[in-house]
Image (spheres, rainbow, N blue to C red):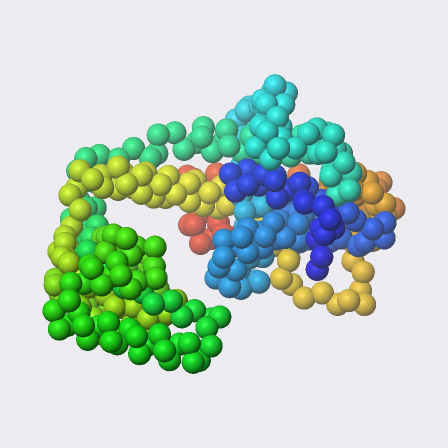
Length: 412
């Protein structure tokens, strides 16, 4: 599916990983959307999931490892993120948290500054994507609110003690091991991809003759200065301390196998023919704890925050009424009442209004117009609150609570 016009950089892509503020792509007048999940009565539509998936795919492609997740993995993770955001926004409203207009404006200006874009350019891009500036700023407001509620509930969850740092250090010594480092020189005769087979043959013959002279007693440094075609020739072929992953594999494999003072055979790489010498070797060792304690502290803080966040989200999800129908098979010949209702929308703003009406069981006249049966959401919500109290006072088990909760969800 093509989510964005190729001549326009999507506004959502401008916002980076810290605040993924999504905007809708252009929608044709007769597109039928459908509800794929509900979170305490608030709906999540298929188009909103597709938009977020498009951004996730862009970010994965940019990371250089797009094959790490399957398509279904990306969709599931995306839907879960949207569900968590809705739960967080609902929790923020319960807690009385708000975001003032000044904070929204400051965030908006920061987005413009970071992406070197004017308000007029942003306006034009939003119009091409079917959104208004006001809608975009409301998305920013929601994302700031999510950040506030997370900070409010997480508190100082990332604090780490010296004892924890020390324990982690001794239990994970492999992470802090510095491998041996050879101090390397080389002599290079260039024979890259542009060289003909005959040129390569002659260069290899010359490299072997130079190697014969070095092993017969000629000084390596002087021979490198005289014959090497690399920029390091003037310093006697000096490369310096070698770290793995910095040079081509053929070169590194040989360099790390040599002992101090040893000289290699002729080594071929895509650059040509090398003769390698190791002057000395720094033995492998563990980094001192003082050098890595800040890194360990950051890792432990991040893990502590993640653990507390997961615990908080699990509690919110356990107490919430969540329905997911995204992966349920649907007969293409059948058009559900909900889809008929959403199909009426001609513009993104109209669609949003219809989505709200479709999920609002109090609006019985609207539901009746499209043949929907009104579910008594308020009654079900009250029943859910009642069984929550029963569980809290240990009148029913967790297993019975979950079973009763599912029965209530099935009635929606």
